[in-house]
Length: 440
Image 1 (cartoon, rainbow, N blue to C red):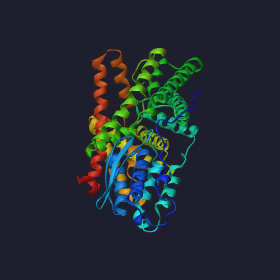
Image 2: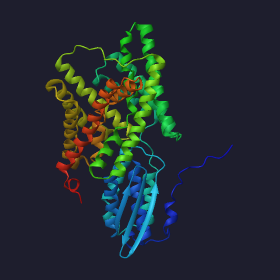
Image 3: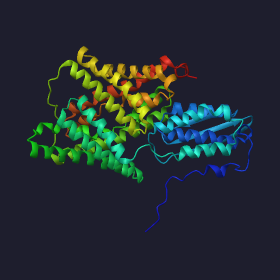
Image 4: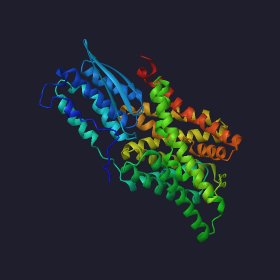
């Protein structure tokens, strides 16, 4: 049996530098300074943030070390050149995969913000040792914790989409098992398509099993099959969709296109898996059964489930509980506003999504100075619940059945909402951040 070899070789950062030197980083060679710039950029890229924020962190390190840095940033790779006087150093570095880790993002941002004060005190070797600790940070939650987080998020999502108690319970178990399976596969470094298909198929099968048991044991009507789509929504890649849109707005076209392509790959594989599962089990997209609720009770339940949904998604992004709770409060207000604008004023879903995302961005900016977390760790999780996963699924389902007109209608709705969400965050950032609104 042949030995497994990594396709992407690890970079041995400590071999590049003079490990015995105790000189402050300010006095190091250009090559050693460039390793710090590149490593910080690559670590920022690994936690799922966009090119604009990666470049901003690299620039903070470069300026503190009195060098100039220019970088071309993609989804998985960075090509950058550092310049000092008449000397240049160019490097190309890459990741083997991508993901989202808001807790590590917060730590790396704090490191970059405080780097200037320490550049004249710590050596390059000492800085790399600090980065080693960040590199080795374990996730805050185990697989079963993340399964529960996705179960909570998708259960709440089900209510917001119109589902009732039966659909919510079945989606809870489906999403919980599906994300638990996917997390186990990710820990074993199983490739993207395989872990997405396995996670979604597990979620769909679990939902079907739950609904069939409910039909047999409790005489539950078959109309509750409509909620099986909700059990797979944990896999919808809201983070790269939104950060990709933000990158495009800053003309980081390479990163933006690569991120959106990555998100589309996941969406296509997830929706196709859901479609095949529906064919196997003879499930069809249906409208949810309407439940008569008083306006006040409905408003309260929307607030509660919006908080729970955002809180669950934030935990899936490895946010600490306090960070997830703050994102949940922001998302609760923003998503309730979005839904009330649609229900009470009949506002177009795309415009309502824009206003919801704009309000989330403004709230995160307003409280940033008190909470200390990067905006993106709050804004993106707070609007991920607005990503129209069900619309995307229905679009693929009907197109696969050659019902192009119906599929095209759902696809158009999904595209309008997906475009509106990052635009809302972009304009919130333009209004509140002078560095972001300038092209320089």
